[in-house]
Image (tube, rainbow over all chains, first blue to last red):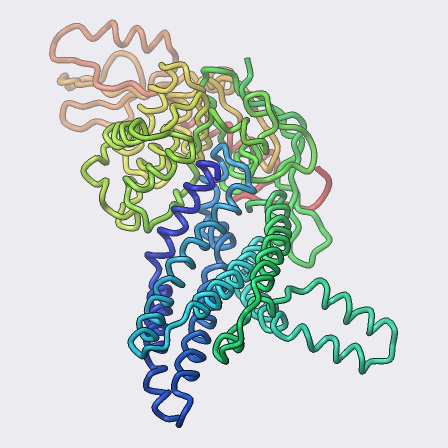
Length: 255
Length: 316
């Protein structure tokens, strides 16, 4: 990583950790993870499953919220607040600026996820139900956050925070429901509609490979190739999205 | 040698959902020479900030070419030896002064321990070493301007571009900026700054470009631009005698201070020569500043533009 990307990343991380939204999300997340214990008391016989399921779902939800809420303003806020002028007047490539912003948010998400995971693991250890597969599930969730962040950064380069937020959340939801395009394709008759379904299925991000929550909660082993596939998908799809973000920012006018 | 060249530059904007182009700059051509102080003057909205953004690669011209240090400004190498202070310094206000300069020093590739040394030097130079640990959001306008200047000078640039560096500053702040610009020139640096404060331009600029409605209305040294119109100076004398001084037109008188208008340089020399004793002393001399101002007003009126700046539709 070039020194300039690192400098921008560290500054983005510093900005994030001085942002109250991050702490608010983190406090809520930790509180909810700990609430899993109370929630499990309401069920009979599946206490362990509830704690694991609720804990992983909380990490998923708050990780995505952090990625979206901080990611959507990552570039557009710098333009809106005009802080970008003095940065881009320095001898830096615009792509370095975008990648630095992305790397800074990745660092923030890493710390955020680590804190949530630590709370979750402590709860599991206290209940005597800790197992390594939980960490694998969290690792895959973290990969998903990285992909969501790349998408949020792309929209941040193209649009304002509100539009970026709507589009990123929409892609997050469709990304988990991409399998439904198979069903839809089977039910529509028009060739153009089938072609559209197929195209969307191929172009939209597929987030299913990152979701093994159900498997680990039910004790189903996660095959190593699943991790490998998710990693390759992240690198290729995330890399392409970041490439598009850099290209979009390259010719953007700082008005 | 020119460090900055604009050749036939035109820039337009489109408003949302509009097919019409609004031309901000039209056929703008000039150059800034190495080692000079170049003042870029014009009314608000004349296109000064747009020009500076084009020069720094923040915007892209519709037509024409720009060369900064011999290169296309959109390439980072062109900006390597350039320092920039934006108008109304917008900085990351969650950073302290020290963190802010450290961040910008990293962007210039400084490594420790040189980075810290350089940052502390600049904080000292702009007089903010005692406020280095305070967040920028707590800085006054003058302090922000000074920290902005510090970041622009961190890497000891050859070319310094300042957008309205004196606007909003008190007289002391303006004097400090003026002194800094002159010091940069003494050290062989090139300074390109935009302003609508004409008195500053007259006193420190080697050459001036006057922008009116996006077009370059005048270009040259202050003397060249206002030749024929200059010819008066305002002179303040300590003058204890009840009689008026022998040369010049008295504009005001308070106790032993007399403010005179002298209409030629020869008269000015004769007046200074006549101050021989009796408590009479020269206190201050300033060129009649309305000259450049009058030239600007004349150009603005001639172009049919309003003083608050106008953009219009049409051809570049």
